[in-house]
Image (spheres, rainbow, N blue to C red):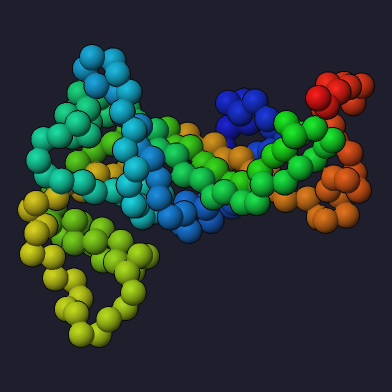
Length: 187
């Protein structure tokens, strides 16, 4: 699903398999919508990747998110997995971070079917909850108090930056971006 033409740093493209793994294992995503006034709105949400769609939920009340979704079904959803921050050159600004990220662009819809909503919560509990045999499984008494959304991606781009092996990091390897720069003298 990655589109190399839509990513500036093609050297950091995440493979389709890597995107799939990230979408399955990511913890939290950020859903971007646009309101009737043209203002963007981003909401952090737990999610599950079900049948090549991103499923999320929020209150059934008409709030910012639901109002925006009712205005326009076009959305983007971003997830990231940050890694270690590391220096790659002589100057403090020659620093980077290991990461993997994916952004899905697509259409969102509201799921009204109670069975589908229950299946979403089963998947959500499987992904996030600690199993507890003393709690009833699949019992969602507040199902009507939430709105479940499904995002159908039209395009997904993924990027990654690997943490270099210790022998390939500064100071062993100097990847300074401006090698002839001279820092100011210390006072």
